[in-house]
Image (tube, rainbow, N blue to C red; front, side):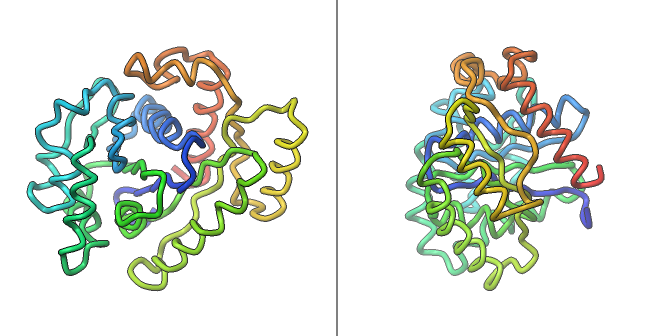
Length: 256
């Protein structure tokens, strides 16, 4: 890693692919290995915030104020039991509209995060399920993009728009942006279609596909309602074991 921290945007404009679950479990898993982690929730639904045990409705300073430059980044960070967090709530929808009045709306997050050099090993950004100005802010600030994908019929088609957006961001504001990897989530190996799509993803993306596969798992689904990641909720569940494997694979790939 060329700088003191690595910024990873977790993005897929398709909802329900395990994006927030992946961001939260990756953040907690890295933190448990003594990495200094900041999780930024850029989704107005605030699900990553809630999964960290923070009530999104109670936030006095959030990603909204951060993006609109109404606070310094250090003032937006909350310490939770597991990771440091910049939380989010529905205020972020208003920020999305307000950003359009700014001169370089896509660079707001990158500008703020440049103040953090040296404080964290990893900064993970949970993007909303859309290719909005919020997602573009995350891509402009990130070193790489991790793309969770469900192995289903339309998975690859939805990916095209995201890859186009990544290319546009590379050409305009962030030439160093890379794809960290594609992660197959909610996988059911008994399903022929899932296996077929999984092998198509491998054919298309080769070494960019994480060898870790996250299975469909009830414990992963239950954990957020307890304000926890799957890793904290039931460390030995199949989902938590897979996410711990992903953490190890990510660290190996980054030679950390």
